[in-house]
Image (cartoon, rainbow over the protein chains, first blue to last red):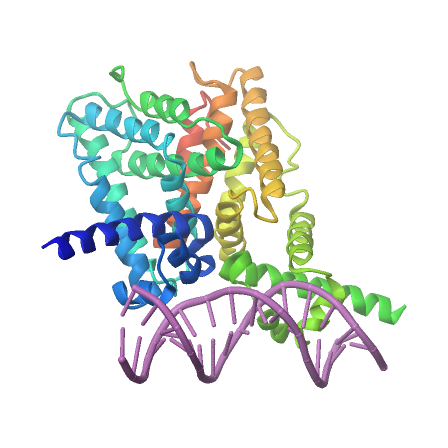
Length: 192
Length: 192
DNA sequence: CCTACCGATCGGTAGG
DNA sequence: CCTACCGATCGGTAGG
């Protein structure tokens, strides 16, 4: 019982530190030995919990997804869903590590040989689909500005968020204002 | 004479292949020995031309900049400058390697310790400034839609382009349509 | 979970 | 430009 609970806690801490390490150095640049020493174990101990470096990466990404589950599940109107996406951007400005993680790994993972390539392809399809759904719902509410195509607007919004993350990481330029202005420009009704 | 001219040509070819290697593997993941073998020399031979790996990266980025010089220098009206940016996106869809290079390296270089960190900070300031200038010129022409702030619109456009590059690399989703639609939405006059 | 090891590979240098 | 080397580090495994 104690051993099991302690084992799970340790594993969760390892995954948190693995995310930081992957964010800082990417997949190739991240060293099992350095991460292990940050966790107070040896790199062989790390490989006792996770059989390979690839498996550790996937476990860490799944761990991150579970921690963020429900972050986008704001059941509400289309306009409210879009406001929720703006809130996510605001929230992201308080967690550089998470933003860095996705910026670095999604760029790395564009290579089909990358261990997380399939994960990021699926992640983008899911994220873009969520944004498209939000704009489509806004259209049904009559809140969409004339000429706005939900399919295009959804892809644009996710792209804008990703691009602003790079600029924010590099120069510190704030993200929220630019995202909010862009979303508002697609609507005929003010964001809450 | 011959030696000098041949030396320059070889060096240019090395830099072209270095760009491909950095794009595929990032800075850390790129190996001098593998690049050298692609160039038909040893890794020590590579270090005869470029004293360190850092120096090779910077030389390759400068080489790339020189090849693309003038790509943005479409002297014309603000609306024409914006159309020129859309043309760059169209052009980029025919050179995956270049798009991959900037996507991978700009994400990596968000870390202040990265050898190209200062380069990418300066690059973004320059690129965003160009887009802001284009929108400001469009404003002076009376071509800007009401409520559009050139400073915000410039940052949004560069961010949109970067984000769409990630999506294009990952899923193959075309970039030009979404960029063109976004730029058009900021204007009161049709793009050429 | 550790010690001890494996083969492989890394960037860089000496010396020519 | 090459050969030959340096110390360091890598992911992974055997065996406990």
